[in-house]
Image 1: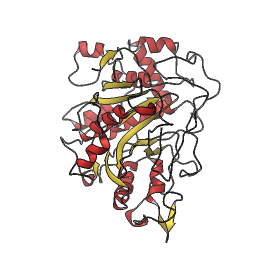
Image 2: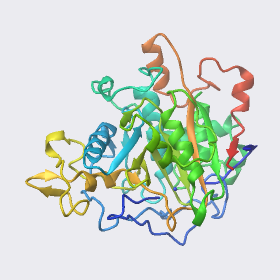
Image 3: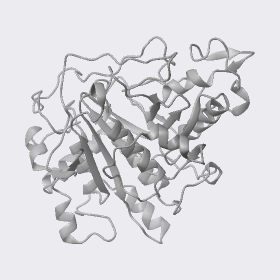
Image 4: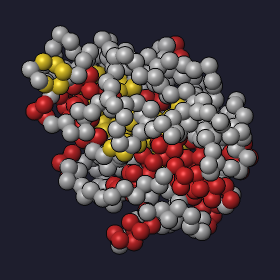
Amino acid sequence: MPRKVSRTSSMTSRVYESAVNKIKMSKQTTMDGFVRILDRGDKLSEPREPQPPQPTSTPKSPPGPIEISGLINKAKLLLDVSKTQGITRQAYLADPSIVLYRGDQADRGWGCGYRNIQMMLSYVIRGSGSHQDGLDDVDSHADKESRPSLIPTITELQKQIEYAWSNGFDPAGASQLNHKVVGTKKWIGTTEAWSVLCSLGIRCSILDFYIPTGPNGTHPAMLSAIYNYFRSSPWSPLTAPELMDVSRYAQREEDQKIVQTSKPPLYMQHQGHSRTVIGIEVLTTGELNLLVFDPGRWVHNAIPTLREESISKTCPPSLGSRAMAGKGLLDAQYLLKAFRLQLHSGISKSQYQLLGISGLYHEDDRSAHEERNVLKLLTRNTSLSIGWNDEEAEQSKLITSTRVP
């Protein structure tokens, strides 16, 4: 049975047989926010956090905007084509309001934690007012109102972390980082993400996959947790899974299609890097891919403006090896490399953490809702969440997780 602990520990990819993306490992090791291997109290004079280098087979694009909206709808479009091609059997995607935040030169090597918090907050600010009780069809999201970005900057997030610490959140993490992150390049992880979110009244839960649960260092329990999470109703929290063969279960399901949900994303941490999980895919081979927004991975410049008529529906001989499939059409398998992340023997990390949002503001007055969701980052409020009493607000200051298994 899962058990509660006070602090925990801290994921990587491949598309399918013909296109394996191996992530190189750095000699620098740390488990941000949970196990201190590096002296995190020191200000880093140079970025040292390992970022997944871009393999030669993955899509490349020149540096572009840090913030890119609408990519989950584009991922669904590509997955629909992949299903037509007989490669994808089934997939679940998070709410399409989530924005990708990419790292830039200023935060390269240390900013992934902040970028992933920005992605989590993009759901809170842009999408949390229009959720339904069940799984939604993509058409219900297609015309979501486009609003200017209200997402805090890295500096504002650093201020919020220090604000949270000053109000009693995560005293152990505050001590590790010498109670100072503003103006530094210190790495942050799952505990700091918790502190930011919970200090804003956003309920969170953490699962700690501290050891592999499958053969050869793999993590089927984590894949099961993610699969079950995206298949559940919008406000069903992230919970410890029962071990199961997801691919066989998906094969038995009658509804084998690409499903657009209104679920929040998941913050995923592993040794040296973090990503935002936006879904999960089951291939016809039975293999599973996580679908992620990775702040360290470039997105092909064709994806933000992608249209169905520009994608090849056939499987060319060069499938997955280059962007153009022929006749001026794009290769869906190549473009999907921007999102796919597979965990299999040889590239899985030993430990992972998942942080999920399990509750947000609920207000009838939309303008009041948006005003509070602008975050007003340096507020004096312990908790902004409707329904939290003082005891619950105090309990959220102590970071807890459920260890699996």
